[in-house]
Image 1 (cartoon, rainbow, N blue to C red):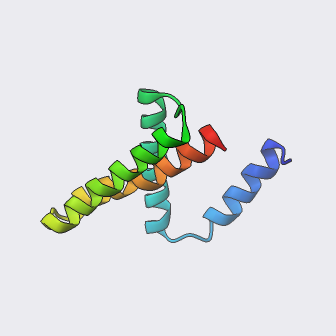
Image 2 (tube, rainbow, N blue to C red):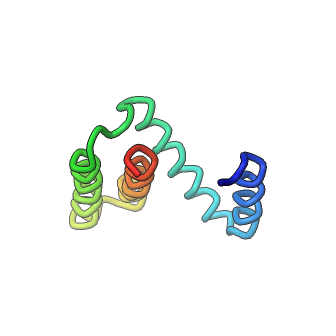
Length: 92
């Protein structure tokens, strides 16, 4: 297992190679993850987590079909990996 310093060193080493857009998207994803974690707490079951991920993906698909615009689509798409991350943290 890693200690905190090793993990932080690895994260910062990788993020340093990312483009500005990649870093911005990571921050947006983390804000979405943190907000959902605070608002809803941990997932209780894999089925619940799957349902939430599917719902977020369906909302993104609705935005795509409606040509809702980049901002709306981005807001929906950032929720997909955030909920997948919650799944991994809470249930794996």
